[in-house]
Structure formats: structure tokens, C-alpha cells
Length: 601
Image 1 (cartoon, rainbow, N blue to C red):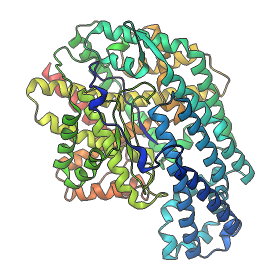
Image 2 (image 1 turned 180 degrees about the horizontal axis):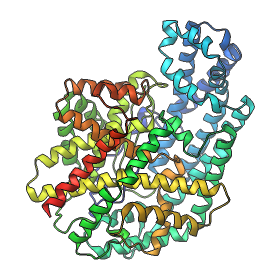
Image 3 (image 1 turned 90 degrees about the vertical axis):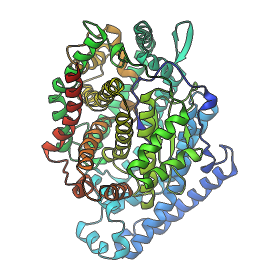
Image 4 (image 1 turned 90 degrees about the horizontal axis):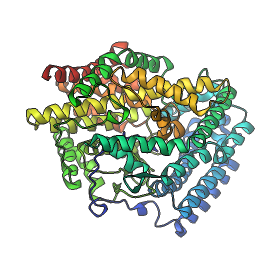
């Protein structure tokens, strides 16, 4: 599941639930108790058993054409399991407080894990094939199609354990990381935060951190601090347990450092990630520190508190934007770039593929879930009607369009590494922003530039700070459990470093790390947002320069899915992410917007 962590920056005014779309998951299954669910479980289980009986221990002797056929069989079984798991995940995201939905989600997770245990031998056995022997098989055209998948699978070859250990780890996942993640999700979704005489969801209170009234923002900030502070021992236990669990597995698999597995999964070298993080941290003063000092001046404050970070500017008259208007703004921007891109995007609105409603129990933030190529992606948003919500819609629609186009590669090769998964989403945001900016008057332009800078700082500076927080936490966890206060100290350290001297943090901010879901679900994921933003900034500058055939090359890049690495995908545009100058080029775009705001006073 591709999740986009949306900062708490939406408006307090909310469209009615009736005016917002909700998804229909019927394209996956009619209902949790549908006979189709049980039929697919039975079909997948029988197919998995037959697959193991027919092929286990025989891969080395197979000619390339037979191995290609076998991979095709494996893909078909995996897609059935992927459909089942996607359906359960989407139901749970829609209402994680519903006990029956939770039970269904856990049951599906356990059954899928059991069935996939029969298939586990396949990737392990493939990775034991000698390099020369595999190359000989790949000489046959039928198997050559699967080269990208085999290439990515073999990245993990040095970290592979004995088959019985791999099977044990696989089967225990449902009572390990998955169970702790579920506990986190259900706890946050079930929390009701007292504010202004009401009991609000965490999402609704986070939304109020962007209210125009500073007293409302302060009350919301303190309420969130109190709510998470009251549960901080639980969140600390979850975090400590998952960090220790990761350390154990990383040690057995001999990963050199806590973030190495994620980098391997992202098909990006540790050194490239280091170059990105170093470039961003070095630029904290040029970017965040400089901008927030200006913002404090605009707000007439000697110091900013954490609840002022996403405050609207004093002259921001950002009105509620109706859903239909948001849809047309985004599709118009997409269409101006590429009618083909817009045509794919329109499908999400013409069909019930989006849930933008505001309701208790629903997952906060926003995400795009690709499900399986034989179906289609779904988008989840919490739409409050602000300009930034329109940007989030543009972002998630970019994910959805990317997932549709990449689906042509099939289930095993359609998924993109997280670093590249953000390309279409951030590019879609940029297209929409530029279209709105070009139509704005000077006053509105300044407000929009400031909002865009804040979004970019949230995407680049804040996410790299999150990544650094994870580095510090996981490194220190190796010496023993961290008490909540110590985790809070690490959090405050990275926040002070990244946001700069404009801020004066109140003690309650020490617990705000606890609401970030990526620390739980996908450790060391967050730098992918900075990677994607800087990549798109560089990519967009190539587009603006009039690069010949840009649109066709861009669509080809999206259609490639997971078949190509970042070097191959960027080469047609004359870009190289391993070049340190690449990251500076992306960061210069943010600095240029800040320069323009600084010049305007």
C-alpha cells in the first residue's frame, strides 16, 4: 500500500459528507461474507499446494522457457492473494474501529500468510541459482521478459537465510510486526480528543492546527499533546518493540545498518540516500530556517510555536473549495500537460474509486492503493476543502494514474520502488500548482507561493528530519529500550535542527512523534518523499526547458513500472540521481521560491 502522510494543514471548515465521494470496493469483492472471497481462498490454496508439489527442488534443472512458464503460474497465484489482501486492507482503512472489519482483516492476513508459505520456496530457490546458470536460462526470450523481476529479487540474495528460518519468519509476521501495526492503527483511529466541548478524531484535531485563529491552533496543539501524552507508554512500547524486532532480523540477515533493507527494497544505493540526506540537512538554514523567520515576521510573532508551523498567512482568504471544483482544477492541469494523462485520471472520478469522506474510524491522511492489475487502484483522502487538499488530491491522483499505467507490466513487475513511486504524485502536484499560480493575481500568488514552499518544506526538510529521527532512535535502541522521555528528546533534537531559530517548542511537542504512522508501518520510508520531490523538481525544470518529446518520455517512464531502475528512467531526460549536483538542482527550486517571497517582503 502506498501511503502519503499528509501534514495537518487542512481547514476547519468541512464539506458535508454527502457532497464527497465514497469508494465501492465491489470491483474486488461484493462483501466480506461473499462466496467469491471463500472461492478465491480455496482456489489460491489448491494452486499453491499444486505449485509446490510440481516445482519445489526442480528449478535448477528447468530450461529457461519452462522457468518462464513457472513464474507466470506464480504470478497468477500471488495476484489472487494480493486481491484478497487489498480488499481487507481497504475495508480496514475505511473503518478500523469496527470489530467485524478488524476480525476480517486479521483472518485474511493469517490465511494469506498460510497459503503463501507454500510459495516461499520459489524465491528462495531462485536465489540459490548460480549466476552463470541463470544467465544461460535468461538467453531464452520467454524468460528474458522476467529479467527485471529476477534482478530485483536477487538484490536480497546475500541476506537470505536458510529455508526453515525464512518460513518461520514469514509465518510469525502476523503475530509480530503486523499485529503491532494493527494495534497502533486501532489505537489512533479509536482516540477521541476533547476540544472545545467536543470529542474529535485525531484527524479532525490535527486539521485545526491550520486554523486562522491562533487560539484554536494552540488549543488543538495542546489537546493533541495531552491525548498522545496519555498514551505515550503504549506508543513507546510499540516503537521499542518494532525497533528491537527490526534489529534482530537485520542482524540475522547481516544488513550493515538499520536503513539498509529499505534502501535495497527501494533499489537505491545507501550512498545515494546519504547524498540526498546530507544535501538537505546542509540546506536546512537556506530553506526552512530562512522561511520560518519570514513567517514569524508576517505573523507578527517573536517566536513560532509548533502550532504555528502550518498557520495560514494573515491575508490568506482561502475559501472552501467544493469537491467538484477541486476535481476540475486537477483534471484541467493534467489535461494541459497531457490529454492521455487526464483521461486516465478522469476514470477515478467517473467511477467509485475514491473515498474522500470525513468519518470516525477512517484512516487519517491520504494514500493510493494499487490493489492488483486485474482490478484498479483506489484513493483514500480526508477532504476538508482547502487549497492544500486540492494539492493532496492532485498528489494521490498522480499515484493512481501511475499505478494504472504501470499495471501493464503485470502483478510482479508493476510495483515501483518507494523512491520512484512518488514521481507521478509530486509531478501531478506541481502541474496543478503551476496552473493555479499562473491564474492568480499578485496577492494570491504570494499566498500560493508561501503555501507551496511550506508543502515542499513538509515534504523535503520535515521528512529528512523524520528519517534522521529514525536513524537516531534505531541506533540507540541497539543499546537498550528507550524510555518515552528519551524518544521525545531525540524528536526535539531533530525538530530544532531542521526548523531552526524561529521556533520555541513547548514541552508537549515531545510526544508528536507518536502520531506519524510511517515509523510503524514502513521504517525509513520517509526519505522517499524528499527523494521524489527533489527528483520532480529536477524533472520539471527539464520540462520547462522545452525538452523534446518530454510528455511521451514521461508516460513511458510511468508505464515502465518496476522494470527499470532510477538511472535508466532518468537517463532519457539527461538526469542522474547519483550526481551530487542532482540534489542541489532540486533544492534550488525550493530556494528560488523563497527568494521570490523574500524579495516581495
